[in-house]
Every structure is written in C-alpha cells, then in structure tokens.
Length: 320
View 1 (cartoon, one colour):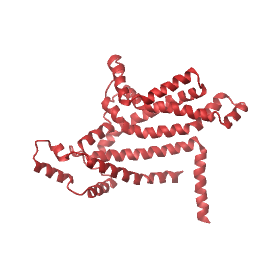
View 2 (cartoon, one colour):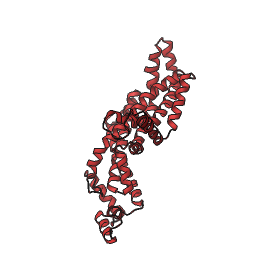
View 3 (spheres, helix red, strand yellow):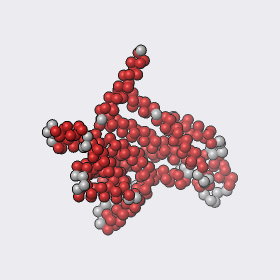
C-alpha cells in the first residue's frame, strides 16, 4: 500500500506541470495590461512599459513559464504584482478557511445524505422514499448562489438567527456549509438509494437473512458497506469541485478565503497569485483522490488484496 501511495504522489509532478502550463496560457491570453491596471489610467505609456519590463512581461512566454517553474521547485511562489506581498504566506493564511468550509460541507452532505438514502432504499415506494427522492431532486437542481441569497434573507435578515458575513464563530459556518453541500447532499441521497437497492437484492444478503441475521446487521454491516463505494467516489469528486465552488459562497457571505482571493487575482491579472492558488488546489485534488483510494481499500478489502496480489505477481516474474 505504501508503494501505491508513493506512486500516486509522484503523479503529482506531471499534474502540476500540466495544470500550471494550461492556466499560465489562459491567464496570459486574458485581455488587459497589468502595468496599466496597477499604475492607473493617469500613468504615462513610458511608465507602464517600464513597469511591465520590471515584471518580465517583455520576455517570451516559454521563458517566463520556465522561470516561474524553476522558482516553484525551490518553494518560491513569487510576489504579488499588487503590493509586492509574498504569495505563499497569503495563500496559507486564507486556505484553511476554504478547506474547513469544504470539509464541513462534505461531512454535512454525507452525514445527512447516506442515512436518508438508506431509509429511502429500505422503505422503497413508501412516503419516506418519495419525500427523500423529491428532496434530493430539489437540492440537486437548486443553484448555489440562489440558495446563499435565500438563506441570507431568511435566517439573517428576517429571523436574525445566523450572521450573514465573516467567519468569527461557529454560527458563521452554518449557512456556507449548507449552501456549499446542498448539491452534494442531493447526489449522495440518490446514489446511496440506488446502490443500496442493488446490494439488498444480491445473493449474499438473502443468505444472511436466511441464516437468521438481524435486519439491522444485514443492512448496515453487509449491504451498506458495499454500497458506499460509488457514494465515496461521487463525494470525493465533488469535494474537489467544492474547493473551486467556494467562490460563490465566499463572495455572498464575505468570507476571506482562497476562492475570493483567486477571483480577485484573475480580475486583476495578478499572475503569481493565480498560479500559486492553482498549484495549491491541484495538490489538494491529488491528495483527495489518494485518500479516496485508501478509503476504497477499507470499504472493500478485495481492492486491497487485488493490488497486493498484482505486486506479488510482479515480484515472482522479476525473480523468474
């Protein structure tokens, strides 16, 4: 398993290279003159050209990209073009808030969605099943930004129960968590239901019931564990998307997070900040996918044994 983890971490290198190159191309194609945007419209063209030269924008594209990657390998994310502030400390300061909201959102989606999906599958075609299925469809269809505004009007403006901006107490996390995890919640309900319905019709479930196993044991010990693999896959994938989706939530609730910081940098064409945010997000996605694979091995030991068996076969071939 450790060799597999190391192998997956080594894949981080081509991922970061590919993602950074693509984003570097896109951000450089974006209209706008950084020198003019930084110095303002009152600056002379000579001053703007001189400032762009200081930023290195007069050099060829590939040279600038190679120079950025050479600094990145040494852990140097560069300086922001606005204020000359180091990029990495600023990102590390803002990233925990974004990550915390995403973790709470995914835990909320799975913690509520899996039980509702199990209930919907066990009570198929009942009133509870219809309510849960309708609830899941609504959540999967509601736009995130609309839900943010709706909750702000209801819980902050009218009921005055929850704060509408900032992250200074546990109450500030409630609405961003629900808004960010709502679509994933609807998806987890539907996936858990469909996966559970497939598992409870399998022969091993009938055998367990025939042997006199309790219904709770059959559902939660046998069927649920095997049905969680597609749910974990979807939630893990959505967790990667939530890291980028915090932009809307952070904008509505005025949260000082990485998403808001990234959008501001893109608007200003602050290339060092954009590239630094993208690198951190790319590393996060690779690590999240690695964690999902490890959870697979825990949920289904056949996956772990299959991987270990392939290693043993390769060793025997090498010896032969």
